[in-house]
Amino acid sequence: MKAIDKLNISETTRLFSNLSFDGNKLVHKPGSVVGSTALIAGTTVGAGILALPAVTLPSGVLPSTALLIGVWLYTVLTGLLIAEVSLNGMRHSGRATNGLLAMVESTLGGMEARFAGGAYLFLHYALLIAYVSQGGEILISAIEGIWDLPDLPTWMGSTGFAVIFGTILYLGRDRFIERLNSFFVVVVITSFIGLLLLGATQVNPNSLLSQDWTALPPALSVMLVALFFHNIIPVVATQLEGDSSKVRQSIVVGSAIPLTMFLLWNAVILGSVTPTMLENIGSTSVFDPLQVLRAGDAGEWLGILVTVFSEFAIATSFIGFFYGLRDLFKDMNLFSGSSEASLPLISLILFPPMGFSALNPNIFYTALDYAGTFSVSILGGVIPAIMAWKQRDKYKELNQKLVPGGKLMLVTMIGIALMAIVLGNLK
Figure 1 (tube, rainbow, N blue to C red):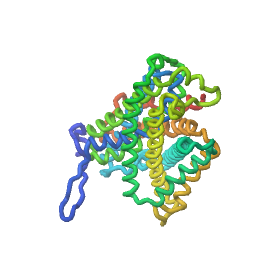
Figure 2: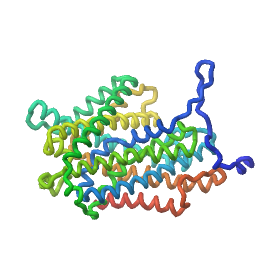
Figure 3: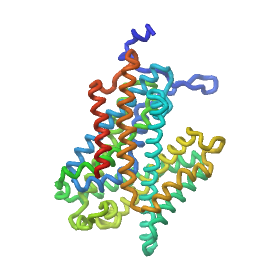
Figure 4: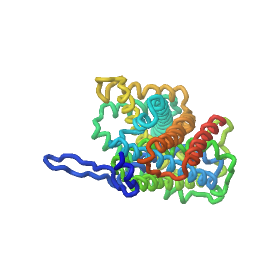
């Protein structure tokens, strides 16, 4: 321990090396900053982007842009706290962390880990419900438009979406799913670029100037969901061999890329909403500008691009959270001895989202709202600050702070997370 006390942590660039045997050779496989940055960016860009225009439309482009940047700064700080806890945990134990929940258990204990596990479970189910609901709505609308069919029951869309992708994930092998998901990502990127280029020609300058700062609070929970990437940080810390400077760079740049996409997306979509479209806003339901654009009110090609981008963005997010929930149930040993693609396990993952979506076809925004208000505020706000607080007190000789400010900063970050929960309950 005396040697540890004299160790200058600031001079430590790498805590360990990723080594593996290739035949008779010992191969060093260091992770790259580019790869880790892409991993964080890919994890962040999900179907949460689809809900942004609906919740930011009442406030306008300028206020929502300011809040989105503020939420990003907060998520970067909480993400750096998780990285700090992960890196210092490596210094103390000499082992790389396995995941966010394992890190919570090793830092705070079993009771807190179960609480975090409950929030993690709730987050996955809430988002799967949102994805099945919205994916089904877009699917059924596209089918009605292509074959000129009358209005079909909305439950057919959500059920069809869940059955189609559930069957693919049940029957498909991992390599096939990986290639399929990569194809979906290419479609998402291509359609997003096309959407921005075409949507920019439809922007109404007067729409960009509209602003109402008092309408911002309802958008907070959805922004927290859209910018959530914290579950992947322990993986990044391990890939980068505990190099704090590389981990910090990956978190900042990797989350800044989606932020830029969200800001451009928000401006283009809100700028494309005309006063005539705003007349369709009802007093009891959420006005979704994407739904109006998908219907072709701002041009047929823009409507097609919005539809393609929306459905494939949901598909990629659905696949990711499906696997995340599957791995969580495996860790809980609910189906010990069964395969990863067993029918009972698939059913446990898919039936609740199918049921909730069928009972309430308009649950998309509600599910995202609850996910951001409770799960993300806890997993991405309260818990990182508490873990850092406890670890800084317990292992002072091994501690390297990635977030300055001491306990006042940690209290402030906990307070912001609790404020988000309160605002979510006041809506």
